[in-house]
Image 1: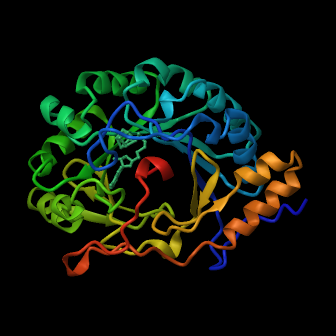
Image 2 (image 1 turned 45 degrees about the horizontal axis):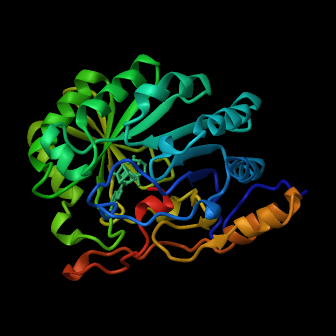
Amino acid sequence: MDMAPLIDPFARPIRYLRVSVTDRCDFRCTYCMAEHMTFLPKADLLTLEELDRLCSGFIGLGVRKLRVTGGEPLVRRGILSFFQAMGRHLQSGALEELTLTTNGSQLARFAGDLAGCGVRRVNVSLDTLDPAKFAEITRWGRLPQVLEGIAAAKAAGLRVKINAVALKGFNEVELFGLVDWCAAEGHDLTFIEVMPMGDMEDRLAQYWPLSDLRARLAERFTLTDLAERTGGPARYLRLEETGQKIGLITPLTHNFCESCNRVRLTCTGELFPCLGQEQATDLRAPLRASADPAVLEDAIRAAIAKKPKGHDFDYSRQRVAGQMTRHMSHTGG
Ligand code: SAM
Ligand code: SF4
């Protein structure tokens, strides 16, 4: 087998795979899902064994960082066995990092076991610390359960990063509340601009540009831009007064594509080489057609060869251009 690492047509090495293990979720965040969702039939989903084969294939081709997402990854039945399976790549040194993005609802139950599999960090999505607003934005979520999960993660020794979607007129008033809470708890904090995914609500009305959020932070703190980049859409700044590092994910106000090192795999085995483009390659068919790793490898290489230069999101001219019809929960945010 040719073990040359994956390099896309724009000379970007592919080191980072985000894998969505389910499209289901126990929440219904308004910017992510409709209240009444039709989920995929079970037969369409990759089994946990198939997910193992696929992810191991990518790791064999040079992927060093694996992020498990969804839907809500921790509601997938048997998911711990998948984390255990991926843990073997950490032990062998093939994988540098195994991590997940979760809504936190099941963390109280899973945090210790995840740490045991070699997970060191977890991203928890939390947009507000107000229980009523939390119930409003997640529709089905309950804040105390999530806070308990976050506390369990911390107790298990996992580093926690809070991801908050910046929502105009919703959590604007909590900007400093969230910053202060994260400082007190020792959590990292990243804000995400709302993206034009799905088809439910008017994203423009919810759009709070992070340039504005940054200006608000600057009213209270001295900000220093940090040079570090992760190959993804996040930029970091430091609040000099507290030493806190704040991430800003601005897919719409900054073009981050030039350093993109990542691809996304859906729970049905479609590979999206770019979050903002519709083209995908089906890897489930070759996976199910043959047990030969070489067949899978060829399919992965062919998919990476189609990675586009950049995405098409654009909120300018007060309309949402490049709007995606699929939901974030399908591709895995
Ligand atoms: N259920 C898990 C969670 O909520 O963390 C993982 C999947 S969720 C789709 C991943 C991330 O995508 C979350 O941080 C969520 O806030 C974010 N997200 C969902 N829809 C979004 C949108 N329209 N714009 C920006 N971020 C979005
Ligand atoms: Fe579920 Fe995460 Fe989407 Fe919220 S953002 S509905 S928690 S998948």
